[in-house]
Image 1 (cartoon, rainbow, N blue to C red):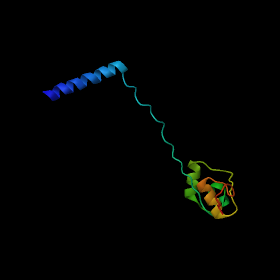
Image 2: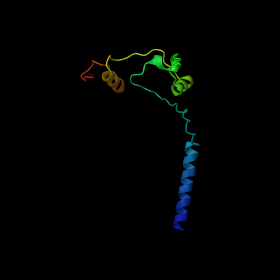
Image 3: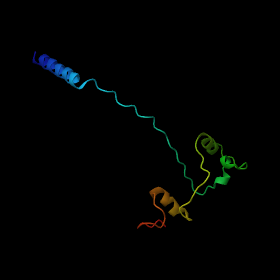
Length: 103
């Protein structure tokens, strides 16, 4: 008996709270998440990929990715050596600035 009275009281309290505050607004719908795939390769020049105009080398998978996505026509390198340039890319620090020595 006590539990049914308690249930009725809780139900009445919830109904009165909704009457005071009004109906609950639906949660905003989040926009769909965009996927980003960034491919970073080592020792691969752009002029050996079919997407950049090379007819000799066959790179069908990279060409398909380039056709469906985004192709960058200009690239810049942070350093002349491989390891410092790669480290600069990973840590978002330019070679030779700050207290960290990247090579």
